[in-house]
Image 1 (cartoon, one colour):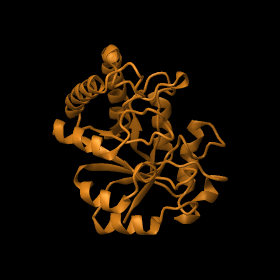
Image 2: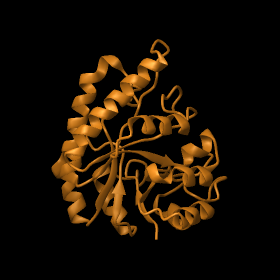
Image 3: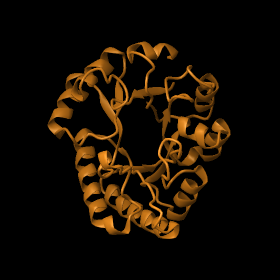
Image 4: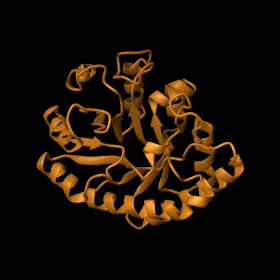
Length: 254
């Protein structure tokens, strides 16, 4: 049995963020995820989770100044201190919201940053994060993201992510497998999942093209879901898509 969690950053956007928890509950969900909770107090989010009997399964570490183009800060040598503070902030939210898995975005690599230097800092920061998280039974995940959506994103292919995880060999650093990004980067959705299922801690979905709900594009999600079940996936599946119309109407694929 697969458990789906709507992403409250991309879904139910016809209402303010704190009102989306109620909408998720009314749509029949018991778990939610979101990208960044930091614009809201912990108490505000806990109130919504408690009132609507929801559990949080994933959110991101602070990723820098999103409005100015930051998409993660963990590859930058000069932002080590900022990254360490972001880990503490994320950990504070995670413990309060009882969320055990957090995504660490890598960042957009500028032309003047050497690839090897970026990789070294990224691994160093992930190791720091894992050590801090370990004290509270938290897992950090890394996610390959396609460069059509985020040009020059550092972690833009599956093999690099796998190599990083193998090099770190830390039990609480895992892979976030986003089917949409995988399709845009390389395809081989089911074969890749089967090959790396032991290091995958979270799955997200959207169709391609358009990053809309399943059934609107080229991905045969019936086969994908069947493979996840046959392979014994028991984590959560985040619905991180942009609905073509009203969010509630986009759930017909379920």
